[in-house]
Image 1 (cartoon, rainbow, N blue to C red):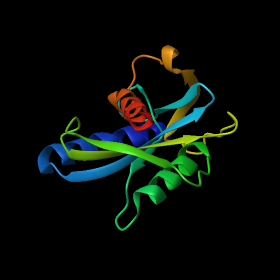
Image 2 (image 1 turned 90 degrees about the horizontal axis):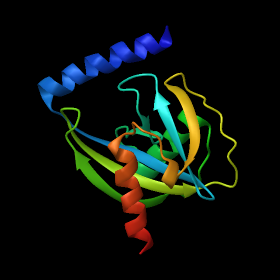
Image 3 (image 1 turned 45 degrees about the vertical axis):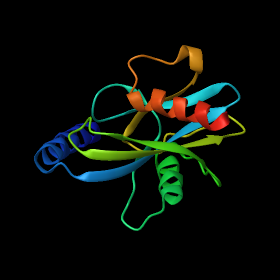
Image 4 (image 1 turned 90 degrees about the vertical axis):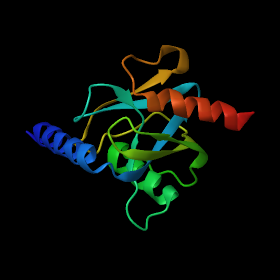
Length: 148
């Protein structure tokens, strides 16, 4: 029943975004353990694999937002997420600036702590699942640029 609520709320938000075209900002984080990255699937929107993250609250720093979202969605406490860049998107009828972060974790033990996340799994870069959100590839590209 909760999944239905998330799906209805997401559809209503998409209508609002279509009508008002707001400027928004969000955070996403590439969580890595050795050679694997953590991807999740949400209970709302399209059924694609994506990165943990979400919207930035008013007066919240980007770092605080990514820490909050990681804890809310997968139970991870990250001290110092590394900012790797940003990009803009108008994919959902809004002017969204997506700020990407990276963090290495010592183990693969995660707990899905939010009803908005229906699945979380670890994948190597060559075995990334499909379909996946474009944010996954965009953040991976930013990570590779930041290493160079």
